Length: 347
Ligand code: TXA
Ligand code: MG
Image (tube, rainbow, N blue to C red):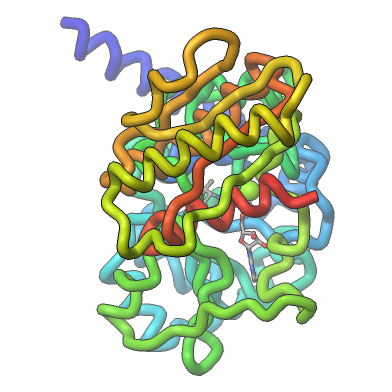
């Protein structure tokens, strides 16, 4: 019975959201990665509202979400074989692929670029919403620009509240990291943003890709030049121990436990409202006046990734002023986690 009620309420929410999309409004909807702030991708005015609501710089393009691969030719001019191979393999899923844009997609969506990023999300509510809206949905992450992304409808409510026409309440996102963005128009293809799909998983399908983003050079993706994922408090990201590859997980946890205590004593001395983002083994090591949040088991990268934005949003909810965070090796999904942590701690 409960199941039936839940399903019905989803259907009602999706119907209402689709009506809003069709009439030029902006809604927040769940995907498997993070919540998106969506509007009709064909409607210039509607897309313009997205930029205003999240205070997004106009030169940062949006991702266009479709429900089935057959809809791709309606919005892109060319589908290179390598892109089709990736799409067929990973869609629906956390991979956004860059294509040459068709004129029917207004320039505001691509921030004036001749290309657009497209993906099919792996989330039943999102797919149903796109189908019922009858149009592709342009959507960035549903957060204020520069703030941590929203992985639960409560985060959207906290950050955007009444500024959006509707928020679909679908609870927690499964993956919790944004999609990986890849440009297959370069040879070799280039990963523009690390995310929910690891470089290894992509290379297994299409061979070597380029991931290096040289410091000081023009950012590969417009979105990568902005400060990102930053909670209100000051973030102190602790470095991995030099010898971590020779250490056991236990030793690494012990190392971080000491580093956190040392940091509280020195760098965060006298700071009020200290928050600690740690992992399971250390979660009971800092009793008392600190707000401790565990990202989960250090051995389970999917767990760590899915809790990352929850942790950062929680720090804001609690009004934490200084946040001390453990690091992870830049391997697989954790490379995406570290990219976000490094940017959240950037000055
Ligand atoms: O998982 C996700 O990707 C989520 C959900 C809602 O789908 N969306 C998301 O969108 O994270 P956003 O706007 O926060 O990030 C999109 C990224 C930005 O870094 C943007 O610069 C890049 O994709 N991007 C979009 N279109 C591009 C293009 N044509 N060329 C290069 N980069 C592009
Ligand atoms: Mg974003």
